[in-house]
Image (cartoon, rainbow, N blue to C red):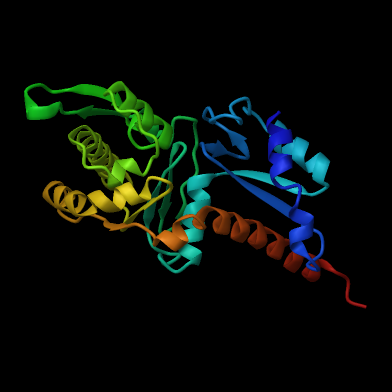
Length: 273
């Protein structure tokens, strides 16, 4: 079912290429953690059943091209870099605050690859949310419950808030929504602190559908981090026009770089007549 769904999304790809020839490679950025082309975290519907390379294999067979699966945060980091927001050699951590919370980490030596399925699972980290008035410590919830669209929507419902649109989180001024916003800011602070003390990034990038909410709490976040860290990372939220393009652009650049390398290798190996 997942293969059929993704196939339906790209069914019109051939027509959009118009004179550019047939595609050689398809790179799919999944809203979950991927290692060696295989998802290592549970994906949201309708991809929840994907737990191996069957999706890539099935699509490759249908389309007749090579298909690769990647983590959306890794592709977003490549896209942000290609747009000029980051220098390729800059150490950075990127948080995709969207359907699911995913994280990409790059040192000055390159992208950090997972050795085990535990690496990079920020969504599972606990964060304590203070209750209104500060009379008690509050609830401890997984970070993914506050830093993903689905998670924060369910968190809001548990607080008696039925959101009609996600944008209410940054446009609404109801006291209950403000408290959810404060919980989001606290979770984001914890996530960046963990990244800062473990991977030492120069820049922390915030992208995804919750990026407008991240922009809203940015001043408060910078102030908190300056109090906690002697040299906090620079916080960056790509512009609204670019935010929705970074992941797709990064996937395109990644696929193109692989094919370019293969082409150069074939030219070098070709016999000289």
